[in-house]
Figure 1 (cartoon, rainbow, N blue to C red):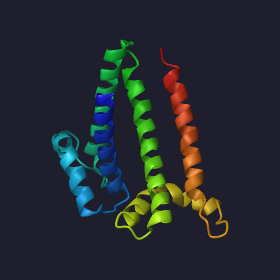
Figure 2: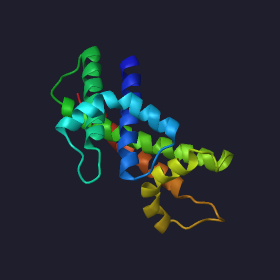
Figure 3: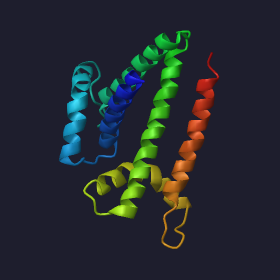
Figure 4: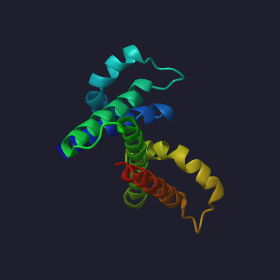
Length: 172
């Protein structure tokens, strides 16, 4: 549980670092400082092996995957399961954590919209969610000035998580 918690925080920071660069939004200074402080020890050495290309920091994404692989190995050692499917299990867990990250940002954006839409983090979180919500907003109209696209995105992410969980359970 401790290893999984540490891996979750580190992977979340690495994925947030990657996604921030994908959507080309600058996080608030305190959050950026936290993200870089937590992830630089892994990202900087990986950049020597995997340089950025296309404007994307691939070292952050690869670092997140490596953390998940190590977390999966630790889980398999504790439980005593077979090692053969470790890479596939890691890929499934990686996608699962990406979905959880999107769900978290959608929920945070919804809370900001209810409590304080002018919070300093609100524009940043909104920018993180925009690529996910834009296609849904084209299809789902506003209902009485209420945007239901975050709810639709959460439902679609839940369906994706159910499929991934079914694949994870199917492993011996």
